[in-house]
Image (cartoon, rainbow, N blue to C red; front, side, top):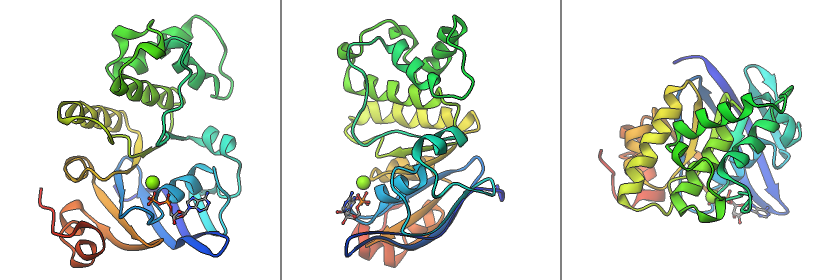
Length: 244
Ligand SMILES: Nc1ncnc2c1ncn2[C@@H]1O[C@H](COP(=O)(O)OP(=O)(O)O)[C@@H](O)[C@H]1O
Ligand SMILES: [Mg+2]
C-alpha cells in the first residue's frame, strides 16, 4: 500500500480569526483505512468537510488520483468518487429503506432509473446487513439500522474513498462489534476509508494508519500502535497510552 489515492498538501481553513485546520498535509493510500483522531475541536470534521468539498479551502491543495479536487463544489467531488456520512443522520423518513438507497444511486453519473436499480440497492443493503428490512419505512428503523442505511446509501455511489465521521458513535457494545464488522466488509470491497473516531478499540482493530490532530495541526502520523502510545498524543488527547 504505497500508492496514494488522496493527498492533502498544506491544507488550511480559517473561520474569521479562527484557524480550524492549520497547514495539514497527509497522504491516504489506496485501499487503506486511515483513522483521523484528536480531541474535540481539533479540526477533524472540518478536514472531512474540506475533502468532500462542503467548505472551500483557505489555502492548500487536495488531489484525488493526481487530479486537483479542492475548489470543486461538493456534488462534483462526490461524482469523482468521494462519499461521506454525516455526524447527524440525514435520511428521508417517509420513504422505504430501498428508496433511500436509490436516492444515493441516482447521484451517480449516467444512472438509468430502471428495475436493475432495486437489485443493485439490495446488494448494498446486504453489505451493511439490512437486506431483510429492504421494504421497511425508514421511520420504523432502530438507530443502528438507520446508520446501516446511511452507509448503504453512501456505498450506492460506488465511491473510491468513503469518509466516516464518528459513524460508530452512540452504539452499544454489541452494535459496536457489528459496526466494526461492516466497516471491515466495506474495506474488503476495495473502498479506501477515512474514519474520524473516538472509539480506540475500533481504531486499533480497523485502522492501518492514523493521523492525529490537535488545535488544527497534525501532531502525529503512524500505525495505531505507534501513535496511541506516542507521548505527544497521550498528552494532547488520550491522557494515558492506549494499547490494543
Ligand atoms: N462552520 C463553522 N464556522 C465557524 N467555526 C467552525 C465551523 N466549523 C467548525 N468550526 C470551528 O473549527 C474548530 C474545529 O472544529 P471541528 O472541525 O468540528 O473539530 P472536531 O471535528 O475535531 O471536533 C472548532 O473550534 C469549531 O468551533
Ligand atoms: Mg467532529
